[in-house]
Image (cartoon, rainbow, N blue to C red; front, side, top):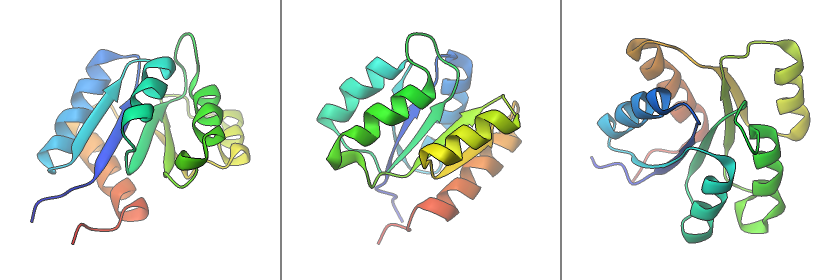
Length: 130
């Protein structure tokens, strides 16, 4: 069965972006990528994804600032938004929860961990395609 869901993946680290994109495409998801917050905002103007996976630490606009810009647009309020980061600290997780994000996961660094993380997110936040 073909999956029709689209995921917007935002990360300033190209290797991580490529790994996650590959894993998502293997699962037949459509993937939009952005290497910065401003680039992600531009892409959201033309297309609404079903889920947003965003890095926390990025130059120019960090993930928390991006989240607030995304949520400020009424048409984006219902899109599940999950932060990803190699930062596994209480303060960052607390800020994400306080902002109202749907999740926070630490970045895995090998392909098996990446697949496990994505599967968990998809089960939690996305309904299967009909």
